[in-house]
Image 1 (cartoon, one colour):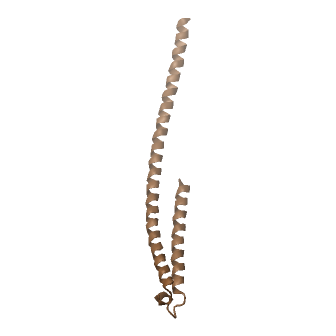
Image 2 (image 1 turned 90 degrees about the horizontal axis):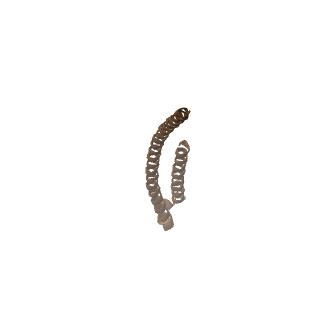
Image 3 (image 1 turned 135 degrees about the horizontal axis):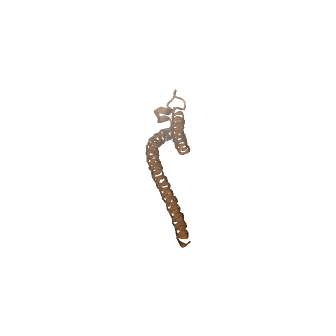
Length: 119
């Protein structure tokens, strides 16, 4: 009878070891999949960071153009943009430049939101 109890305990232990091995394999696969997903997310973040950096460079250029246009407008009638016959050319240029800057910001924000939603 003691032999039967020992055999039963051995079978139960063997079953638990087998279950543990299967859990270990499953977890190892989960970890590997998690690492690949993490690497993909890291690459996506790096790519988006590059896009943001490029967008900031473009934004600085547009901002510089806008400031130059503001300075010309502030100089008044001596500015070629505000000379007689041109109407409010300087103001129109500023509005266009501001609109371009806002459009760039909207495009960048929309792209970032789209890519975050895609993940």
